Length: 95
Image 1 (tube, rainbow, N blue to C red):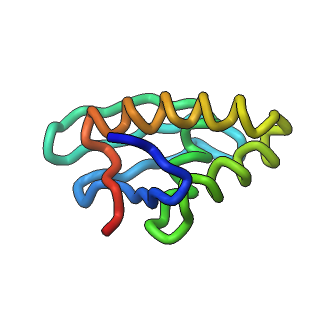
Image 2: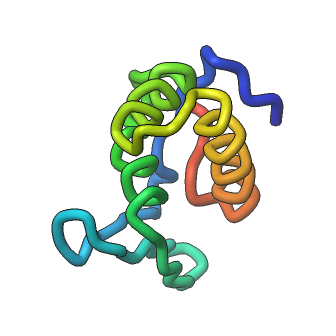
């Protein structure tokens, strides 16, 4: 899938996540597959921002500000992460 700045994502219907606390790592659970994934703080921040309303470009901007990195790096990192999450069917593009 081509990730444009206008793409909107949300968690797949069978997916939930839980943080272990502020600025901590967490887990993502896919009920359909039964897989439990560990994730770091930045991955959780990305998942938290996927509400189906914000565009990928908006998510990248918020992420860059939160982690004080340039937007090009944020876009590269989040594109890679989004591709993996899409492949594992943990997120879906919103209609």
